[in-house]
Amino acid sequence: MFDEHFDADSQHGAHAHTPAATPQPRPDFHCQIACLSPAATEIVHALGLQSRLACVTDRCDYPVTVQRAFPIVLRSRERAGGAANERAARRMGTRRESISTAMYNAEKAGTGGFGFGPNGDRDRGGAGGSNQHAGQSAASVSVDVEWLRRSRPGLVLAQDACGRCVGGHGDGVVARALAAAGLLGKDGAGEDDENASDDDTGDGDGASKRGAVGVLALDPQRLGEVLETIAQVGAATGTGDAATALVGQLRERLRQVAARVATAQRKPRVLSLEGLRPFAVGGHWLPEMKLLAGGVDELLEPGSAAVALRWEQVLAYAPQVLVLAPCVSQSPTQTLLELERLAALPGWWALPAVRDREVYVAHHAFFSRAGPRLVVGVEILAKMLHPSLARDVAMPDGHGAFKMKMDPNRRCRPRQLHKFFQPWGGAGDDGWGFVETSRGE
Image (cartoon, rainbow, N blue to C red; front, side, top):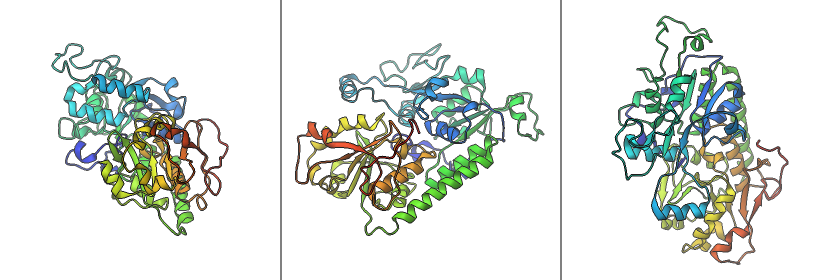
């Protein structure tokens, strides 16, 4: 994805980062788990491993209580940017970078792009370091290396945690932090305690007793690989049977979606924007999600990286359904503040999606996070594209969606457009109905 999942080609070394090529930690039925990405936290939650969760990131927001219950070890932070960024901040309230955007920016900034220290707050030239990056932007990713070194969680789950890349072209922020904390072994799969023996067979709970640390890099590119990573987490945590059952359920739900929309007379051309400044269309698993939901993505092939678009390209593509789900927005309500800028662009009212009022604002978590809720995203997309065929979707409280609702042939001033977006419930033959659901589901 544009923000939650950056370009693999620019961040990785020569070796593959597919689930099949990722080193698998030894199974541990009792290890404490450090989740250094929102997707990892959601996978742990789906497998019922909350009691073993040791820490999270500041972007982990599902379930809703997770940030209040666990230490925050990785933070993505605002970069200083002068008046332009200040104006943007006022427009968007507390809009922040997603973790992967921050990591990408940190990589471009070099070693000064992230902080190490007891509180994860050693910015450029921090404790004992030179201030060679003074005048540049503040660190955009802060990792509490001291917490990792002191706590030594039994398993670390993260996106860019490939130890084999440390020091190379694909050197990742988290991988460097884990190396600094002494948690990465020479094989990049994790570091054993100095008392561990090479001939230890690993009986399922010995790893925790020995102080060994397993590291699992979660970096899927396609929808099937997302499901594979869930199985990998299950294997690493000793919950393989539960993971297998969960993956089976998710696959069955995907099959049901595809079967329901297979009879659709048309497959609309869909554009999903995961970036609005600049415009960016989500890649990786998103093209597959659109196909399964009964739509067409003529811009990207499944598994390809996200790409930036010029407005002229959006006009030329002429989407029949437009979904706005920018990763930097904390909620669909916040995204509504961006509509004024879109409506002021030339040709906005001529887009087929706008003309037919098929414009949606949705929460990015259902499309950008490589976890179980991507299946919910497919179900939501199917209901958007084929409301009379797709099954009703229960929209979780706080993660709802909006749809454009305006009389045909009517227009409005750009600053008034957000008033013509109404809550969309994902139920009924037209999708405007609502299914009751509990908070935070």
